[in-house]
Length: 287
Image 1 (tube, rainbow, N blue to C red):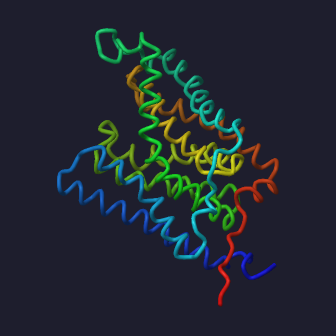
Image 2 (image 1 turned 30 degrees about the vertical axis):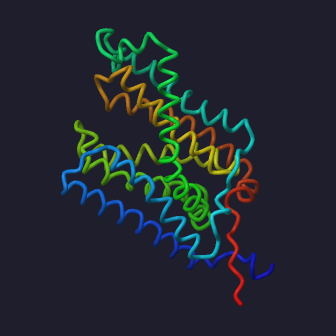
Image 3 (image 1 turned 90 degrees about the horizontal axis):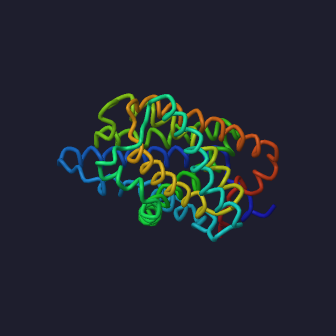
């Protein structure tokens, strides 16, 4: 093994992970707290914070001499674009009927704007496509950080299960100050940002990781991130919940099932997973 292909020392990589985590969480918290003090409540200002993880990751990659090519770019096999669409649809198709059947959600009244939209499937599809396209750059800002930078390093340092768990916790608690200061969850101002959101992200880690590992590029999980956010957002408007906690719990239960299946797929071929996603980064040659 030449010096250029030697893996980075474990202690150095852990320090880089700690620096990434502190920088992302710290910058985000300071910015959103400042916006709150300035009474800035515009959602676009909060959405701009989605670029923080990717920006920090790119800065660290350039600082180490690795560059951004290691993240993985391109289109990847078409089958994983199919799964990027299918997985959120499957989760919704499993959870929404149960919520409706149990009386926790119902179709919006026809007299409302969303109720009227429910009778226009092509218009719904058009809106989903438009908002997904708008969301993709923001999702990419996150995915470069979480999948492109942190995922492989966390798994390399802590193993598959602990690495995914840590990534889910960091990802989830990164959202917490944003949702808290923006008052996103008025029904659960503390429970929502600091408990429900981290659980949500922990359960989303495996499907995102599976797509990134199998497709070998960042574009596929980025697309699913954007599409899932828009799909579930429209679902909540078309089928407003009478019990948001219950509908959230049902969705998380479906996420558990999907994550278990995909995690088993990853663990069935650990060597392949290591080769595709967790390959040690090269150390620049000194000279």
